[in-house]
Each structure stands twice: as C-alpha cells, then as structure tokens.
Image (cartoon, rainbow, N blue to C red):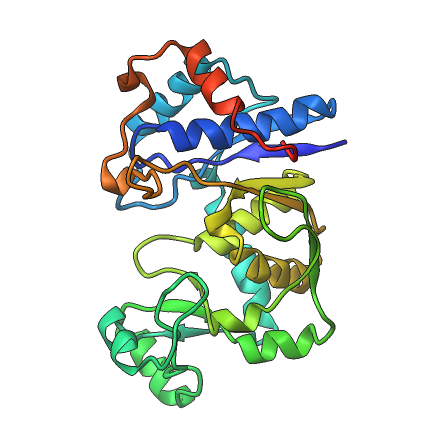
Length: 281
C-alpha cells in the first residue's frame, strides 16, 4: 500500500506552493487507495511557532485536505532522533564540530549540492584531548557525519527510484559524498532536517516520499542514512516548484502570500493547483 506524507514547518502561513505539495501527496495516495499522513516538522526552536502549527492545520482543513491517523509532531520525538545519533556515534561515524559558519565559509574550497560551503574537515581529526577540552568547557558544537567512514561502511552503489515531475525518472544513482561531512545535530536546534526526516519516513512507513524538486539532491544523503541505519527505502516523486510572476520560488522567507489572502475559494485553489499536475501526478 502506498503511504505518502505532507511535512510542513510551522514557520509561517501556508502559501500556494504548500498547497501544491499537500494536494500532490494526497492525490498520489488517494488514487492508489493508500494512506496520506500529516507531519509537523517543528524542531526549529528559533522559528517554529505554535500559532503557525494551528494555522497550518486550519488551512489544510479549509482547503479540504484530509489525512489518515494522528498528526506527528517532530518536537515530541527528539529522544528518538538522539538515539539515532547515539547509534551512529557507537560506530565512530560522527564527531563534534566547533567551527562557526564564518570559519567554514572562509576555509571552504567548494559547495555542496544545496549550495552551502563544503565543510573542510577542520574538526574531523581534532586531537582527542583537545576535543574533550572543548566539550568540557561547554563550547557550542554541532555533530557531523564522517562521510569517509560512512561510505566505507556502505561501499556498494546506492540507488533510489524516482517517479516525479523531474527530467530524470527511474533508477537514480546516489552520490552522497558531494555533501561532505554533513551536520546531523545542530548547535541551535535538535536533529538536522536530514536525520529527522529520514528517521520519520522510516518509522511512519512512508513508501512514496513526495516533495519539491529543490530537495532532490538531498535524497542522495538520505539514501546513505537509510543504508547505515538499515531503514527501508521508499520511492521518491519530486515535483515542480510553484513560482511567482518573476520566476522565483514561493517561500515564507520572501513573504509569499498566505492561501487565505489570495481571495480565492478553496475549490478554486484546488482546481488551480491540481490542473498543474503532470502526467506523473
């Protein structure tokens, strides 16, 4: 049975891009007689707000989106993410990183697929005594995945199956090493997006991950975490992004208009969004 999910972050109101993502995931599940889940990714302690969570749920109901089972809140499962981190640590796959963003940007010699500075590995080989001194002093730190060791434990090629609105479908070869030693536990919030979302898709039994095309490259990294943790591998359907009149992706950070401010009835929004589904949708 197909199981999909919509997993917004409560950092602002839902906009038209969110409507597309929610309806796309719901449509994929319903047309196959499957289940559609709602997850609230609310572990960003700096930006997530309860009032946005309430607004998201109200807006989805207003739009006519229905989901199966209770809503999953990531903030209620931090201990589970911490257990994943501990399991990786027990295998020598993570290490604390004390570098600031400015230091990383200054020393980096490349970019990751999501256009972040590629971590230069400064803290990877930090002397044990110095590492313990930093930790004992309470210096702020993140935890990074040792990509070299991780790939050594998973030497076989990694693949996933893509069926979305992209220029490549079918069996896709992964290259997670392009991300370098990625952060799995942040200084300013609990688990990173990569750890939390991959864990949740596994424990919730998601069989088809639908999300925007901007997250497609991250699938390579998520596929590596699945291999390391022995989690099942879902299929993926990355869909197109909704843009404004200037061609820029709609985003909360750039003030994209909330659904209810568009002056359209829910049925009109649904019709407008679902008319844009490709043959894959």
